[in-house]
Length: 283
Ligand code: SAM
Image 1 (cartoon, rainbow, N blue to C red):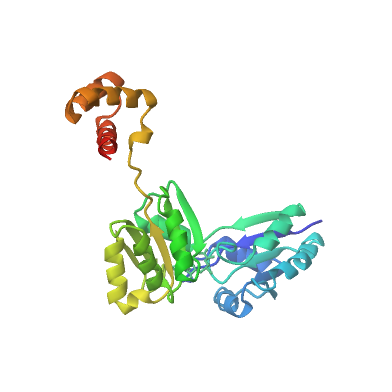
Image 2: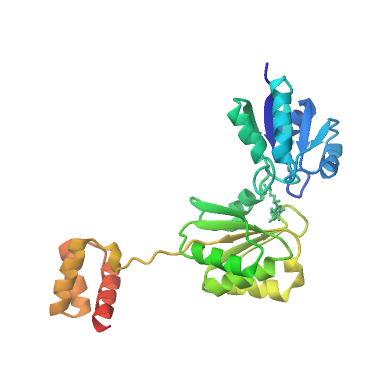
């Protein structure tokens, strides 16, 4: 009978953020595959978990995964943990889980802390749609290219950043986005110096520049999605035609009022479109 692979979330700072089930599973399994065995020992000691450990990190996971899968096929249950939070989220584990799925092995999540989700939940930004970008490129030019691609993203977007690069990353962000864009800096979540700042990019950058403490620790950065301006290309062809004819005969104000009556489109949208049409007449 094949065993099972458990993907177990561990705390992201506060050791109390660990579930009863996670403790139970880590006690019961035959083997724990850990990103850093020395690091996880502190957590295991805290919860009186005595179990066998094997190392599975980004440099050995491709090679180590098949051996662990063999053990599971031979009936062992294995738990996968990373240094903090949910494995695979900017952490090792992907090759092992992928191989397990390919081989028809049951993979069960033991959910818990994740910096991304914790930050989203307190950010005050829309969370119905978001994209997670993991860690950003290390060089400034690659970061700016990345930010340029994300500039028009309408969903909230989130990335992880280290204390070494937080200031440089925000400076790069300001070169690409307007200083009025709302961002959230979620720092040291669940720890003593937990700070969550929700403000314009300009104001957040000011705080980080002027307060050395704001450059320390671990960070999740969240960026509010771009606001989509309704413009001429977003009204229907028929609405466009009506507006154009009216604009030839009347003022913008009258043309828009009449177009609202005729087409039923929203006044604000038609007004914006009319301004753009007039603007392109003048060019
Ligand atoms: N797997 C983890 C998770 O579920 O969140 C993330 C691991 S990733 C290697 C580590 C990064 O996550 C840190 O550099 C930081 O950007 C973010 N992070 C982890 N713990 C955090 C915390 N307590 N507060 C803010 N950010 C944190």
